[in-house]
Amino acid sequence: MFPSVRVKVRNLDPCQQYYVAMDVNPVDSKRYRYVYHSSQWMVAGNTDHSCISPRLYVHPDSPCAGETWMRQVISFDRVKLTNNEMDDKGHIILQSMHKYKPRVHIIQHNPHMDLSQIQSLPASGVHSFSFPETEFTTVTAYQNQQITKLKIDRNPFAKGFRDPGRNRGVLDGLLESYPWRGPLSLDFKPFALQLQGTDGFTSSL
Amino acid sequence: MFPSVRVKVRNLDPCQQYYVAMDVNPVDSKRYRYVYHSSQWMVAGNTDHSCISPRLYVHPDSPCAGETWMRQVISFDRVKLTNNEMDDKGHIILQSMHKYKPRVHIIQHNPHMDLSQIQSLPASGVHSFSFPETEFTTVTAYQNQQITKLKIDRNPFAKGFRDPGRNRGVLDGLLESYPWRGPLSLDFKPFALQLQGTDGFTSSL
DNA sequence: CTTTTAACACCTAGGTGTAAAATT
DNA sequence: AATTTTACACCTAGGTGTTAAAAG
Image (cartoon, rainbow over all chains, first blue to last red):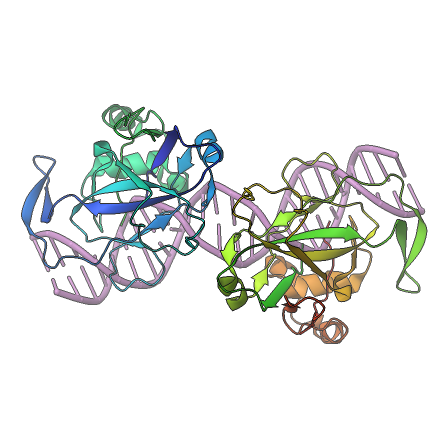
């Protein structure tokens, strides 16, 4: 998943232990198609079969003290997406041509529970955050050439496809429409959610 | 560090949480030199200055339930050694031309303590194990050609130096003198330490 | 003289988009 | 016709011993 979700969190108890996790929720029950001439995603029908329960990606630094979580940008750059409903590698399962929105969860560590293998969210002690600007549409082949160029330009692993001369102008325009101002900001005080920046965001199924 | 220390552990409380860690202790206060004609390490003097407190490598799966630790071979294949006393990357600091022996520690997770950043062993709740056959001598350049060949043959990252035709006979002899019978075995019952196998073992400083 | 460092070629391991083929 | 899969070249990232130079 690139760009990856990056988050800063505040107002945790420095001495308390927390798990931090991410999942990805459907925005609606619609299937979409991309209309080239208007450069827009349009509703193309309803979701066939409702999906399995969404998988949880637990941040590999978990569990960790609030102090440590707050000191760093929390980056979910190892999250993997798949459209294979039979996936056995723990990847997050999504349906192609659908809209999704990531959620970030701050989970208070309860010493009485063994969370080392958690696969779903506990019933209590969880605060969840999501950011409208991180909504994205899943594809198996790119529909929007601007997204392709954004990825080639920003992802180090795609360096082989950069064309230093020819595409410069295109990229400049791209960076305007996909601002890149740093990590999202979580404030742990309930009802005091605050955004610090935005990330352009796409899936790369 | 190759070969890496690999260990199986038994008789943990399946529901208890444990940290597993490794450190490397000096065997004596002697400096050694390798004598070619007798293919032996000989004492060459005493250690100049006694070292800093040994660094602890905490296994990245920590903390984890006893059940999970027992289900898998615990492999310390990410341990890094250095002779740089000013190292700031958390590597284990050793002096070259000295003898060392790794120790494995099973640390009961105390919910009242934050062990997520432990740098030294707690005063209680620790069981430590070491295996005589894992003793090794540190070098900055290989002294013993058998060790070189063992590493080239067994380490996937050294595949580029394998010579399929010419060295076959030499390697066969090597494998006899450096048995490779699988992971070491830890039994958590005190005073019931039991070895299941042995690892040939060298540093690659 | 012995020991250590640094640049190097050669690997493993795995994250990219591309293009053609396969599927629906 | 639209969507998905597969093989591929091209990267990043980093673990090997070698070799020649440097250090002691």
